[in-house]
Image (tube, rainbow, N blue to C red):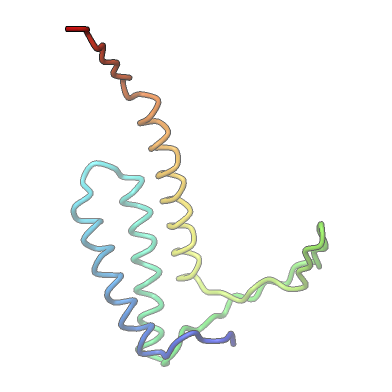
Length: 122
């Protein structure tokens, strides 16, 4: 079990507040399915972790992947972190959302017309 940065009650209350905000974003975002799917994954993972906190008092991590040791450029990893499906849903949803924000903002910048104003001497 990892080191907790706060109490279980803190995590439960903050998860519920964030979940309400994510639901609001899902409902108000009617145009973009990519954003809706990523937010839905985040909400689903949050719900899974909330259920664990209510049922057991903590999030149960049950996926333990043993990988070969990694030694690369001074980075050493002997074992992958233990996680659960809810954690995976949140992580995948966040990666999808970040990728959308990066590429969508770049696309907007490329397609935005450049406005040039000429200053005339009076």
